[in-house]
Image (cartoon, rainbow, N blue to C red; front, top):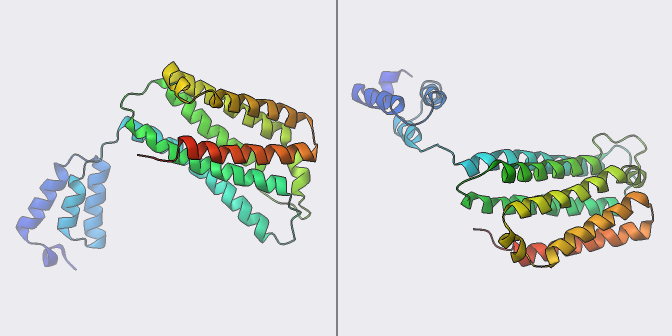
Length: 244
C-alpha cells in the first residue's frame, strides 16, 4: 500500500508538521515516522502520540531505576522457586529456607508498594536518593544469596541455607542500618512519627541476625523467621496499608 493510498496531501503535510514540531525527542519523532511507513498506522493516532507530554519528573526518573532493581530481584526469586519445583531430580527443600523466600517476596512487593509515595516528592537531594537505591540493591543481594542460580543434581537447600547464613543475615542486618539512615535523612519529625516500635523492631532484627550468623540451631532459626515475617505483615498493615 502506498502513502498516497491512505492519506491526502494535506494530511501528510499536517502529520509531518505535527511530528517535527512536537515536544518529544528526535528518537521519538523517528519512531513515529517509522511506525507510519512500516505498520501503515492511522495518521491521527500518530499525531496523538507525538503530542503526548513525555517529560519525566525527577521522582519518576529515580523510581525507574529502583523499579528495575526490584524487578530483577523479583524475577530471580520467582525463577528460583520455579527451578526448585521443576528440577529434574527432587530437591531436598527446607521449610526455613522456603519461609525466608516468602518473607523476601512480601518485602519486595511491600517496597514496590511503598515506592508510590515517593511520587509526591518534588525536590530530591543526593543523600535520600543514595539511601533508597542502596536499599533496593541490598534487597536484590538478599535474594541472590538465598536463591541458588543453578541447582546441582543432589541439591540440599538446608545445607545451602546454613552455609550461606553469614552473608545472608549480615546483609539483612545492613538493610536495617540503611533503613535507619533513610529515615533519619527525612527528618526527626518523620522518625518520631513511626513511634518507638520502629527503632525497637530494627534493633531486634539486627540482634537476631547477629545470633543467626553464629548459630545453626534450628529452633532459633525457626523462631526468627516466624517472628520477623509475622511482625513484618503486621507492620505493613499498620503503617503502609494505603497508597495514594
